[in-house]
Image 1 (spheres, rainbow, N blue to C red):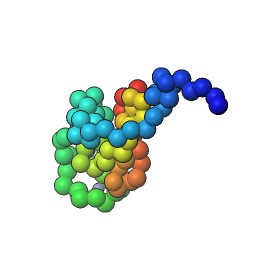
Image 2 (cartoon, rainbow, N blue to C red):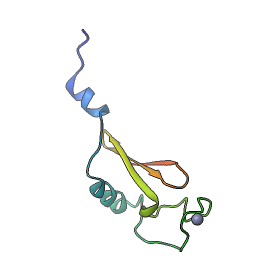
Image 3 (cartoon, protein in one colour):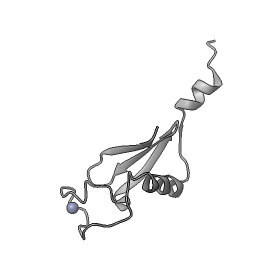
Image 4 (cartoon, protein in one colour):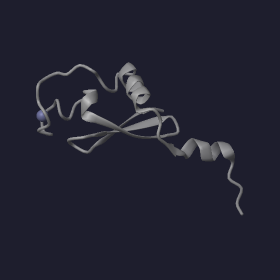
Length: 82
Ligand SMILES: [Zn+2]
């Protein structure tokens, strides 16, 4: 059996943390914003839908210190953290 170092395993582990906390940090870091820039409700093509408004994104997972968010319209991912 190979020996897997605990720290190595920990770093790459996929976890789900408190999504509110993940959003809060993403907003603090400027990755996402709480400011709604227009009244679009999901055409998926405009700059707003593709943009950084937090309401357009779902928290998906965390690997190491990186949080993954998925855009609910474009299905693209962004990451925050290291
Ligand atoms: Zn739109």
